[in-house]
Length: 144
Image 1 (cartoon, rainbow, N blue to C red):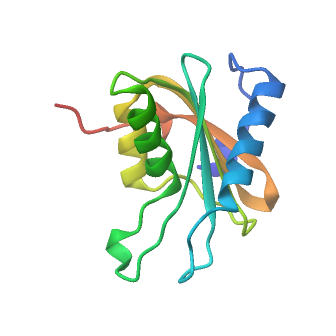
Image 2 (spheres, rainbow, N blue to C red):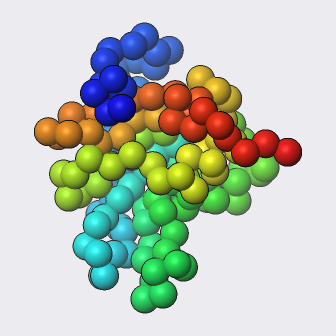
């Protein structure tokens, strides 16, 4: 799947916007609380109003209570801007130089505040950045 997602595809974002979003994600990853796994992740959301909101992973000794960077960023965005936020794009970065797509729970949370064409950028193999829409990452999203 990652090799397919790495192909260039047109997006409405400029290369400068993408680079800025990735830089925000990398910067906030340095704030991650990851004493157990040392897997520090950051996420940066570009909201439809142009605002960038970031979040990092926060681990817990009870692993089930760990919060992913993507969910932390979304929670922060809702707290700052209200429940009507919409995500235009999201960048995920980790400081371990490891391929890492958003987990299933994060995909569902991203979906909740997105449109099907919301773009997700994430680390792929060999230090490359892959991209996919949330609809591609979660084709059978849970809906009510």
